[in-house]
Length: 439
Image (cartoon, rainbow, N blue to C red):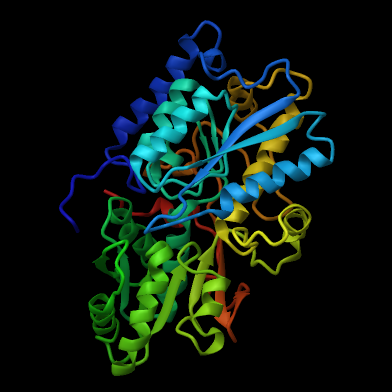
């Protein structure tokens, strides 16, 4: 480990009592306002107007993780909805913000959301939960469908996640690898957010009766990973009786690691690779050689069905009609998919509000009052109770722990069906995460 003091941006919160106090305090502060949180200055979302203003943010053009497809998908969705009459006659205006992959940028985007009177932040990406959630909470603005990259998204009372984030992906991956792998070597960012990855992967390995993975740190924005690749290969091949597995989880820089790994692996016994969506997708698999590349045979966990699944057809139709030729939007990108689902939630909220005033307060109360959102089978029906079963491990807002298990077969991401890879073909990771040793 790095020896750094853990901060609230790590995937699983510590200490939990502070989180509980923050959750209760935010709700109490909201209740104490005479006119409700939606009436805090700067948060009027257009009451009496036929336009609903929201914001989507993501990092762009940085040296680390970039998600330009998320704001681009949001703009395409709004354009499509508005062209078809809006939602209940209301048009959607999307403001976008580049959060620059740093805490200052994230806080600036949140303050801008409050200043510009948005009713929600929808389908966004940021690693800096403590930087953006506090300003949103102060303004009473809900955060719908973040990418799930920070633990704050699963603890904040104004956060409404649509997937299980990295906790579910890594737990599901560990469960899949438990039966298939000998030694497992995890290569993950030397960052605050990366510090929680080992416990999550190990929760799945433990559920399958497998020893913990070795934990290997790497710079998040390195230009090459030769030394780290050599070390991971030595660890994964330590047991000659079983083929080991190397699990790179470096976000956008996983491809840089795999370039070094491809060269280094020729000097070692065979190993299998595995990772999570967000670290690799079909585009990256194609770019690295497809069936002859380093990902062939790799297990990859995701939150949603594979991109070729017909349940994505409505999203693809919107992209074709409103963003054809926009190379920022890849239908196979998990960020684009998450944004689509987050805006599906927003639409359900607006339909429930009907002719009522659309304010941040109204959006939150609609979500809190038992609204159930169907996503056409892309996720389970979504609903946000005050606490979930995973509150015991510090994730009271995690409502969808489902993952899909995919394998790269002949260069294509292919769904693994139940009965393959032992009994671990994805599914609900709630029970697995309940056993996570997050300290």
